[in-house]
Each structure stands twice: as C-alpha cells, then as structure tokens.
Length: 183
Image (cartoon, rainbow, N blue to C red; front, side, top):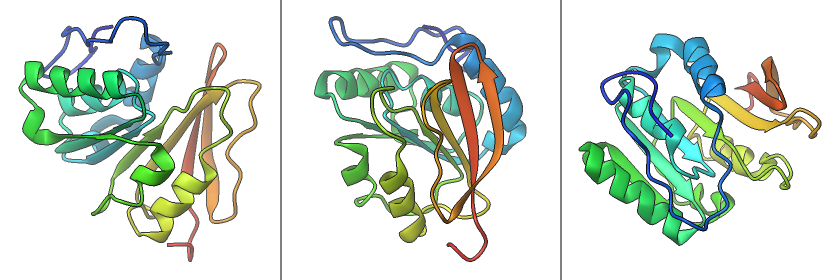
C-alpha cells in the first residue's frame, strides 16, 4: 500500500505478514482527504483501529502536526513504529498498543481529526467516541470519521450528529459532529 499525497507520496507502508488487516481502499483514502482538504494541515490526528496506519501516515504526509495510532495487535503496532522511523516522522507519531476503548482513557490533549476503522464485525465505536467527548479530546470543531460496511449499523448516539455519509462501493464513511452542549 502506497501513500497517495503530500511529502511522503508513493512511499510504501509496511504490514506484518500473517496478520489479517483490511486496509482502507486507495480510492476511499483519496476521497477522504479530498473532503478533509486543508483542514489536515497542522492537525492533531487520532487513527483508531489503525491497522497499517495508512490514514495516520497519509495525514502526516499531507501536513498534520502529529498522529496518534491506536492498534490492538502488537506486531501491527510494531510495524507502525518501524514505518514511522523509516519515514522519518517518529517525532510526530505516537503508537499505542491497546484496545481503542482503553487507549482513549490514557490520551491527553485535543484532536482535530479522528478516524475510526474498527474490524467490520465489531459494533460502532460508541463508547470510544463518547469517552473522547467526555474527556474533551474532541469537540464540535473536530472532524470525526467512522468507516464501516455499507450494510452495517451507522453510528447513532446522543451527543453526536451525522454531518455527511459518503459511499464508495461497500465502504461507508460517516462524518460525525459533536452536538452543541455535548462537549
């Protein structure tokens, strides 16, 4: 898998062998960053259920100030660290090897862009996003994106609103906002 834009364009992202990872398709990444546009420049990014880290690395390549990658599988988290070092962005990257719902309780600071791509068999990350909101790590200005299968239940929890849905084949991107008064 290659990065498609920015200073790291065309660089290959490593992925450990034997690990079942479902990377976000290239055309979906292109569309995502076309929608997000210049808002990624200088942003603090949170890549939840990071897998290869493609979304976080793409954000760094396109000018994000920092990316935090949360990945449960230790070999995959190690590969993200190695890729960050290989790309020379290790000072702008933090990798947490933990379940997303636990990792978000240890995070500090505010995030400008959050991308959640849990395994499609898992339910929407309601608790994870609610914890981020309650800890004031996200607010109404944060760009929240939840990737899921077209036929999966959408993210629907009080305190969040759907701003936009984008469908790319079987992949859905649900853009969410923190509702006024919830943060």
